[in-house]
Amino acid sequence: MTSLRTLLDQVDLVVVGAGVVGLAHARAAVERGLTVAVVERDARPLGASVRNFGHGCATAQDGAALRYAMAARRIWLDLAEDGVWVRPSGTVVVARAEDELAVLREFAELRGPGLVHLLDADGTHARVPLGDGVVGGAFLPLDVRVNPRQAAPALAAALAARGVRFHWSTSVHTIEPGEVGTSRGTVRARHVVVAVGHDVDRHFPGLAADAGVRRCSLHMLRVREPHPREIEPAVLTGLSLLRYDGFTACPSLADVRARFERESPRLLDAGVNLMLTRLPDGDLTIGDTHAYAADVPPYRAEELDDLVLAETAKLLGAPSLTVRERWRGVYASAPEPFLIATPAEGVRVVSVTSGIGMTTALGLAPEVLDDLIP
Image (cartoon, rainbow, N blue to C red; front, side, top):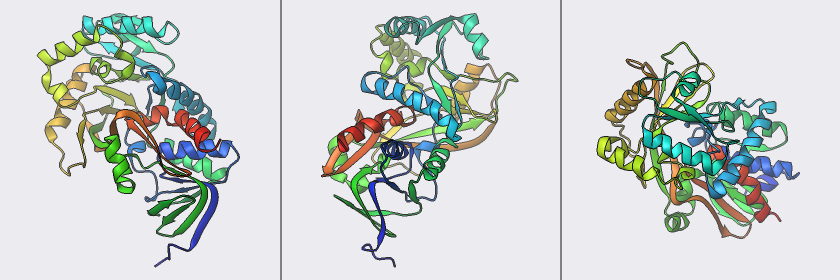
């Protein structure tokens, strides 16, 4: 057995976790000219960073998240030069009821014409092949799509080419000022960033409890595109209006929620955010449901998959959908959208606790390092 006192590496910054949040901090540090090591328990990224929609949903954020998301958007587009699959495809928000369209009108007033383009029913159908019942929509041109299965591995490869040292399949046992003890030895560093997503409680249980961190589990599916026409933008729906903070200031949002409570309470009970994105091969990632608990149960309810499939088929006007893959996504959730904590001198714990890590991490990380490394 390797002694924890064996020196594995010595750098300016060690990052624990090779998800998108950890990689964002590694990139921000390299941009500053620092030496960086990343320690990851798995052999490659396997967590929330590869199980999501790959949707950089910048426009629908609010507050600090909006600032981080807009900064991250610019970085994602730059990363295309490093081999990361990125498309500035925008987002179509589909309105299938007049109250949803009212929210989009109010949102357009808040954000302005450069960020939100209102669409009538024909304009919405022209951008996305949809079923009946569409009354209008909005196009958010600044949103981006990445390939979630490729983005984190490609970013890691680009960082390795710039000198970041990755210690894969290496578990972290201890985290102290200036030192991280791992299953392969000790990494010494002036600064430490812990970016382990929902596993904050595995290292700092008290901190996680104080912040109210729980695990949010999602039902997601990959289906064959039912139409010959490609769907280029990401697609959100009226249920999405209830889940993104940018819409909370819209007065008509209460009417949308009340209608779903009357007509489709099962969708709200399952925490459905009906949305989809296209993968590079043409298949669609669809979902998703939301359930919150301290731990994720091992059992998947088939009825939740059936619910998502039925609602997506109705949205697309398809008689049925062919499922290629099913999986459970998991991310950290807490009352505040971001957890940034200092459990010890020179150590930062960073977790995006709102399901928008792909959207915000690359913009969040430079601000964290501004504070950690003045």
